[in-house]
Length: 203
Ligand code: ATP
Ligand code: MG
Image (cartoon, rainbow, N blue to C red; front, side, top):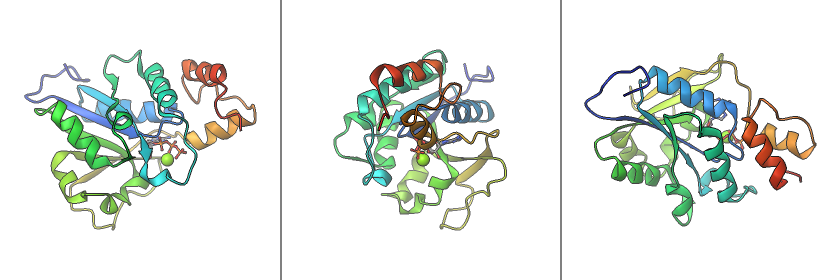
């Protein structure tokens, strides 16, 4: 049964890729909102291995990011977490994520959820053309942000959806944690505790 309680001929599955360093309530609200609007049966969170756009940056090890994602999503029966990207060696490309999930759910209609900021770069992504055949793309924006345009995006391939005012970013959560400012309510309680227990983001 989908989010709205309907039956569909094909399962409708959202894919929420991210570094999740750490996962925060902006990601969770975005996934929940897309699941509602697109009547999804499930949203799979996929923590990246080495994110191609962050090769120059220090990223927390994959197991910690994976576990925080599991903790954050555990209470939602429609949210699951996949290890496909962190178990695949090398840099993470979205096309590989889509192919792996497609292989696991060959019947499913896939909806790739991504920030509007990243959509502008989509056409430069590896094998962009074949991505359109594997999934619909839903670009989430904050209210007031303009929808993605230009960037040679084929008509009708990327939908835009406004997510209620959530100016939360992992960058800000990391900065706060490193200067001992509170991160309560920006991330789920279990993630606050995980960060503290493992001393993440202290420097
Ligand atoms: P960083 O600040 O380190 O870049 P981030 O907060 O952008 O982290 P990512 O893991 O890079 O988090 O994001 C995963 C996906 O979630 C991206 O497509 C991103 O655009 C989207 N996203 C991030 N923050 C929000 C938010 N507050 N609301 C909706 N979508 C978001
Ligand atoms: Mg980001």
